[in-house]
Image 1 (cartoon, rainbow, N blue to C red):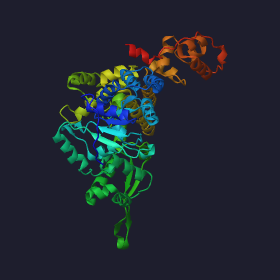
Image 2 (image 1 turned 90 degrees about the vertical axis):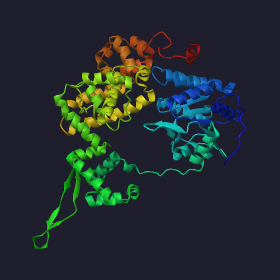
Image 3 (image 1 turned 120 degrees about the vertical axis):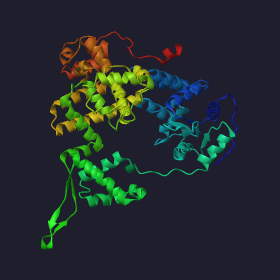
Image 4 (image 1 turned 60 degrees about the vertical axis):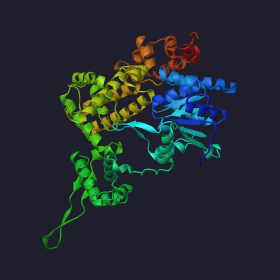
Amino acid sequence: MQKTLKIKHLYEHSVLNICLDTLERKKQALVFVNSKSSAEAEAERISAKVKIDGSDRDKLELLASNVLNALDKPTKQCQRLALCVRSGVAFHHAGLHSQQRELIEDNFRSGLIKIICATPTLAYGLNLPAFRVIVRDLKRFSSPRGMSWIPVLEFQQFCGRAGRPDFNDEYGEALCIAETDSEKEKIFDNYINGETEDILSKLAVEPVLRTYVLSLVATEYANTKKSLMDFFKKTFYAHQFGDVRQLEEIIKRILKSLKEWGFIEIIDNKNEGKEGRKEEKETGLEATILGQRVSQLYLDPYTAHYLITCMRRAETKILKDFSFLQMLSYTIEMRPLLTVKVKEYDLIEQKANEFSSSILSLEPSMFEPEYEEYLKSMKTALFFYDWINEVDEETLLEKFNVRPGETRVKLDLADWLLYSSEELAKLIKLHGLIKEIAKIRMRLKYGAKEELLPLLRFKNIGRIRARKLYQNKIKDIEDVKKADLSLLTQLIGKMVALSIKKQVGEDLREEKVQVKETKRKGQTSIMKYDEE
C-alpha cells in the first residue's frame, strides 16, 4: 500500500529525519545498509541526535555496560556499540559477538532499543517488532561488476520485517531512499513492479551435491546407481536442471571421484544367463568405512580428500603450528578467506616462502588462477597464527579487519575441520599427527600459546586468567596445588580460585578466603569512555 508521509525535514540526512519521526510516534525501526561500516556509522549518526526519556536511562546504561564487557577485553567496536546503545540505538552485523547480537535483539523486542541499523543478515529468520523498515542502500558492491542493484527477493525480505502481527501491528511501513526522480522511477521499475528471481536448488552447487551423493550411499538409502538416479530425478534440482542425461553424467563423475578417493566401492554385478550369456545386473554402491566417517562428519568429500592428502604429505615436511593452520585455511568450507590487498602481496608471498618447508597443501604456480586463493589462505592462516599467539581482538581487527563475531565464526569452522582431521587421521593410521592436531585445536579454542595448555584444562580458566597465573609462576596442576589460596583469589577471583582448588582435590570452605575487597581489573565503566 502506498501512502504519503509528512516527515519533518530537521536535518539534511533523510534516514535520520525518518528515524526521529519514528521515535516521535513511539515506534521502532530497522535501517538496512550494505556494509558493516555503514551500519556502524549510521547508528552513530542517529544516536547523536536522540533524546532519551528518564525512565529508560538507567536500563540503557546497564545494557551498554553489558554490551561493552561481552569480551574479556573490549574493542573499539564494543565501545562504539555501547555508546550508541546508551541512546537506545544499535548496529547489528556478523562482526558482533554473539552475546552482543542477542542483547540487541532481545532488547529491541522488549522495546528498550528503538532503532537498529543492520546489514542484510538481520532480514532472515528473526521476528522483530519493527513498525518501519528503511532500506537505505539498494545497491551493493560485487566484484567484478562494481555497484549493482540488490535482488528483488532480498528487497522483499527487508520489507517483510515491517509491521509484525505477533507484536500487535495492524500495518507496517517500508521506505526506500531516492535522491532523484530518475532513481525513484528505477526503484519502482525494479522493486515495486518487478518480479522476484527464481529460487535455485542448493544441489546445483557441486560440493553440496557431492555431500548428498556420499550420504545416500553411506546410509544405504541408495545402494545402486539406478536407485541413486531415481532419487535425484524426483528432486527440485532435477526439475530445474531439465536435462536428465546431463545430470546422470554429473552423478557418474561424482561417483568416479568418490571411488578414486576411497570413499565408496562400485560393484559391477554380472550373472550367467541362459546359454552361458552374461547378463548385467544393477551396479552396486557401497560406502567404505572411511566414506561412512566422512559422511558422518558432514564434510564435503573433496575437502576430506584434501585433508587426507595434506596429512599424508606431513612425513616429508617440517611440521609447525602453521602447517595445520594453512591446511584448514585452504578448504572450501573456510571461504570467504581474508582478502589480500595489493600493498600486502609482497609480505604474504614472503611469509609463504618462509613457511614453504612446512606447508602441507600443494602451492599452485603464480600464473594459475588458484594462486589468488592460495595467498588468501596464507593471510587467513596468519590471522589464526596471531590468535594462538595471544594477539588481542582489537589488534586483529586493526591488522586483518576481522571483527570479534567473524573471529568466532572462523574459529568454530576451524575447530570442526581440525576435529574432522583428527578422526580421519585415526582411520588412515597417521597416529603421530593426532596429538599435534589436538594441541593446535585446543590452542585455537582459547587463543593461547602452548605453555598455557596445562592451565587451560581447568574449568573457568581462559587465556586471560591462565596468563595471569603463568606470570605469577603458577604453570601447571602441581603449582595450583602448592599455591596459596589468597594469592589465587587476588589473581582470578574468589569463586574461581575455590573452583580450581576443588578440581585438584582441595575442597576449601569459602569463609577461609580473606582478601582485600578491591575492584577487579578488567571491569571498566562505560563512563570512562564518555570522559575520554
